[in-house]
Each structure stands twice: as C-alpha cells, then as structure tokens.
Length: 551
Image (cartoon, rainbow, N blue to C red; front, top):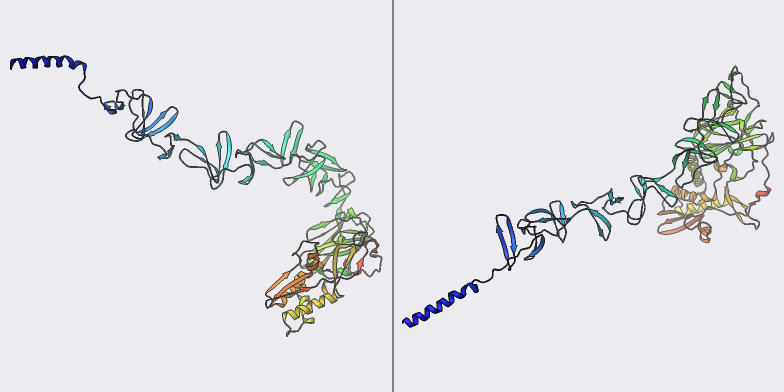
C-alpha cells in the first residue's frame, strides 16, 4: 500500500508541474459584449471592430473609434447620414419619418428619378414638384401637373412662353433661333430698348422699325433711318408736320399751341377746326368766324336706280354731283364711319363694287348698310356740312324669306310631295336665272366672279346673288318645304377646282323616305363678258342710271 501510495504522489507531482503550460478551459466564441459604456462585438480572438461597419447575423452595425456600437438614431458616417434602429441595426430601403434611406442605408437627399413617362425630381422628404418651377443645380426646370419635367422645346407656362434645352434646363438671356428669351426665361415679344443714341423698338424676331411709323401700346411712334424713335417736338415726315410728346408718342386730334393736329397726326392747314381757321402754315388765324363760311362748290345727291331698294349687308351707291376736283377736301360719314375718295375710273366691274370712286361730273359714294332702318349720311367740304340725307334699309333675311315663299306659292301646290316641290323650284331657278363669266386669259379660259342675275323686278335684282350661294339657296328652300330626313350642301365636298368639284359644287342633296335626290340651281350660259371692252357707265345729265334726288 505505501509503495502504491508513493507512486500516486509522484504522479500527482508531475501533473501539478505541467498545469501552468496547458490551459484547461476551451477558447471563447465571438459575440456581443456590454459594459457601462455600451455594446461592442468581440471576435473569437478577443479583438473587436473599430471605426467600421460590420455585418452581424445579416444586419449591418457601425462601431465607433472606441469600438462601441452606434445606437438608435441618425448618424453621420463618412459624409452620409444613416439611421440605426433600437439595437443598432442599420435601416435600409425604407422611410424614417419624412426621410428615405436607400439600399446602402444612406439618407437620400433631393434627386432625379427616371420613369417610363419621363424624369421627375424627388425631394428628401419624398415630395416632388407639380405645376411648379424648381431651381436644381443652378438651372430652372418646370414640372407638369403629373410632376414630370418639361423636355426640350417651347412651352407656354402661365401666359408666357419658355424654351427648355435638351435635358429640361430653361434657357435665359439668349436667342433661340429668331426669338429672344430674357433673364426670367420668358420669350420676349416686341419691346423697347434704350441705348446711348436713344430709344429703339425691337420686335420678337429681332428686327426693328426704321423710316416708318409703328403703333405701340395704342400710340403711334416714328423711327428714323437708324431705327431711333423721334422724341418730343415738331418733325417733318413725308411732307407733313407732326408733333411728338415727351416719350415719342404722336399727338393727334388736339391743339399744340396755335397749331392743330388731325386724327392722323398731321398738322392741319387751310381748314376750319371748329370755329377756328388755320392758315397755309398751320397757325390759327384770329378773327375768322365759321358762321360766315360758305362752301366753295355746289353739291347734289342722287340715288342710282340699281340701288333704290337697299337691304342689310349691301353697299348702297349714291351719286354726288359736284365740280369740286379735290377729292381730299370731301368727306362723308354714315353711322360713325367716314371715307375719302379715290381718283379712279368706274365701270360695272364687280371687283370694284365696294370702292369709292371718282366719276364724270362727281363721285360715287359706296355706303355700307349693316342694319335695317334709316341710315343717316352727312357730306362735308373741308369739315363744312354741305348735304345730309337718309337711306332706308330693309332687312335682308325678312325679304329673302318673303321672296322664297313667293316662289313656292308661284310654282308649287299643297298636294305635291316635298320632292315634287323641290323639282319645281329647281326648274324655276334654272329657267329664270342666269349668270355671266368673263375671259381671264388669252386662250379664252373662264373665271373670276360669276354673278347670278335675276329676272327683272324681283327684290334681289340689285343684290346679285352669286353662284357660290346657289346650293345654299336650294338648301334653304328645302328647309322651308320640310319633310326631308337630311339636307346637304355639296359645295364643299371636294377640293375647289377638281373635276369632282365642278360636277357637284352647285348641288343640293336631300334625303326623302330613305332615298337621296340631287337638285341644282346654278345654270351655265354661254354669255361671256369681255372685261377689256366693257363700256363706261354714263353719268351725263339725263342718264337713265339716275333715280330720285336725295339732297
């Protein structure tokens, strides 16, 4: 027993000598550690991360310069801002309140976003501009009502026009082709420009007026040969004298000292202004009384037989008999309108029907009759009233309807069908109306206005319904007859001048009991007028063109 015990003691001594050299506990695994300062991560070799990111169990954490984990809240790291949840895990691809963090966890500030519909701009809080301008990277951009950026081209925004470059940035202080955009980006229309030499006016295309009048903002201005505006004072322009106010606007209908400026701005000479006479130099001459004034010439006014009955929408012509050779001294007014006279020869040319003409022994006055009733007319010689009279004007629509009813009563009976009535009306028009064309080229080509002449005595004899109106006239008859399912004017169905147009332009098409019928009221005669050989109308005393004396 002792021997064995001794052996045991020796073994134990050896073991005790070896223990300091061989550790008995196993190595510690990596994991979270905590002390009074916070949490850290200890690797299995007892080291720990410092000033770095580390992914742990699928989540990202950041450890500061002491190795402690950043806890809940926002943290700026290497120039980006990140949000850590409670427990330290980094947030990603999510909203934190009104702020968004992306896949890398970084807080997203304002940025461009591309989609199938275009580019839009997201703010840091997730909002985006709509129907608004936004300054981005030093340039202005506009976003539509869906929030998409307006791309290259011209765009009207809130009443102004802007140009966007490719990429959407607004152009400013530059020319885009022939158009200029100002500092605010708005397209500049016509505008004033000041320079060392004076004011000039730039148009939207970059041009400017020179040696010409220009109406600007309701006032007239004149620009010299260099394009500079004439400023305050008297100026001779094209043989007339004008006065410009400070700022350059032309004076008109007013006295400047002893001188009067007419409606056109020119200085009045040798005429009465109210009860004041201005002489050849334009200056007021004291002591002359308007009440003592007499006309220099005699005047008589006559109706013309073709215009004795006048309807609304017409120009009624009257004859002014006078030996006054100066048409610029004569003026007439009607319903607020005034006209002067042109020194041209008058013939029965429809292209001249609305002009005012000088003829043998006097003048023709063409007076527009826009409204039914009595139209007063006054004639002046150098502003002195010499004649006044009235023209009685009948309502065109009422007369038109009455005459159409007269034709229907004349050619149809109550027992006729609508189609039979239309046939009778068309036959009547074709039989009783005719129109004339004139040569327009050396080969005998026909063209020009084709005036539809009526039978003698009917109301529109002087109105001269033309061939353009014939299908419209038939359509009106069809409406008056009634009973049709459809009424169609074929004039505009084909392009003017084509073969189809020549075939169908004079046609009124109606639909009755499911069937279509075509009617025409535009006859063609071979009666051609040679304009070169037309005779002048005689205005000699006793001519049968004169009607009653009006004044």
